Length: 90
Image 1 (cartoon, rainbow, N blue to C red):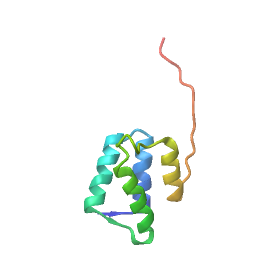
Image 2 (image 1 turned 30 degrees about the vertical axis):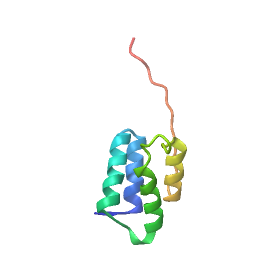
Image 3 (image 1 turned 180 degrees about the horizontal axis):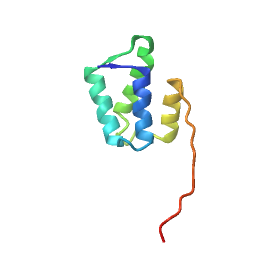
C-alpha cells in the first residue's frame, strides 16, 4: 500500500467525523509505519504526521483538535466547521 497525502488527509477526516475511532486511527498509523510506502512527492511530510499519530495514544503526546487542524493544513486542507442546533425528542 502506498500512503498518499490525500489518503492521510482522508483518515484524519474520517476520525474527525467519527467514522473511525481514535484507536483505529492509531492502529492504522502503526500498520502504515511498518508495512506501507509513502508517496515520494510528500514523503517527509507524510512520515512526520504518521510518526506523530503512532504515539498519539501515549498520554504524554496525545492529540488535540488543533493538532488535526495543523496536520490537515500541512497536507493542503482546511477544516470548515458547521454547528447546527437539533431538536431533541420530547
